[in-house]
Length: 107
Image 1: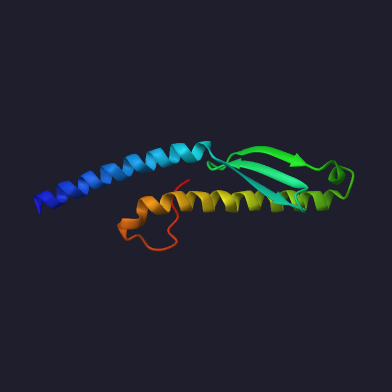
Image 2: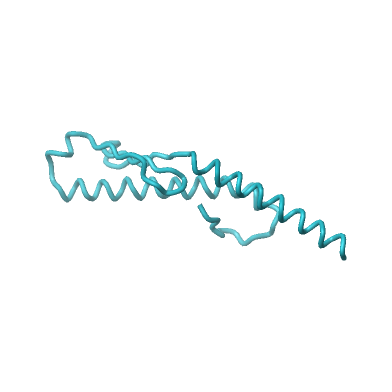
């Protein structure tokens, strides 16, 4: 029993170190969300920080509501990509833990 507990503790320490490493790696990764056929692009870090917004000049002279809608869609696309990237990265780390499917790891 004592040996099993020690092994479990070592495994938890290894996993914690791996998670910290993964978080550091993810902090440096960026994804790009797009909407309006690529007329709006939002770059976002996997720490969910918006890094850049690119807007096609054609949209700037047009309908304000349409531009707002396209910005929201591009932001949400970027956020979905961040979540997918984070889950993909953490899935390998948590594979042997028996966690329920769909459990979201912190980004």
